[in-house]
Image (cartoon, rainbow, N blue to C red; front, side):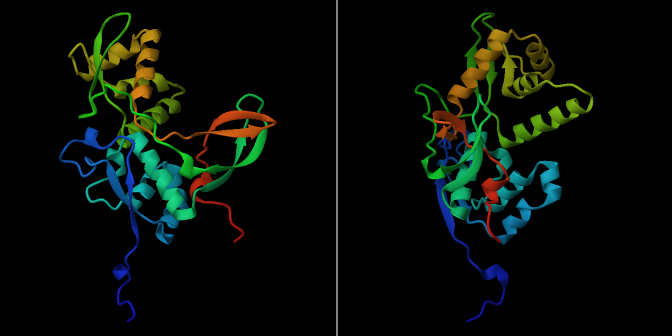
Length: 254
């Protein structure tokens, strides 16, 4: 029997694991079990990828992920950045397969080669022992001043806000990426969670302690490992898989 309504079509859905394990979202979250359902890309998602308006606004990836996520109550803004990365990799594999041919550049010589990455060989970063992921709140004593702070891991919403703040600064000829990020990461200073206190602290933070915090965030942040080894000019180098337009829009002969 012919379909009476296009909405009657059922599209396949896959369940994928999240690097965070899900506990950080809380027991009431549909992500608490550490999994999310995503559907296969369709022509609808290809329209999203080619929307110049969405590309210009810098929201094309979020629109794409929200269209693909099939678990009710989950939006990309709420996801940790590492979990978003894992969904992007899984979505690309489901749509076009695990092979990703793209041009890569030697980090020091600048030499470029065509290389095909195997996206199915991207493991999750190992979560360190002794870290409590029951909520997105972590405590840290800074090594020099002994100031005690709490901090969080950034979500898609946080990253979007950071990007907007950086664009606003750029319009007036300023750049402040590190302090802008730290203001989103730090949630309290010696128990004081007011915005004024956090902003003032960040502006006067010792560079040694800024680095210490950023390294700690990187250490505990659940993510998917996007580095692979590539042969360039007879040398084996480690490169980060580039997320170019070809990632979700592979070259075709059409």
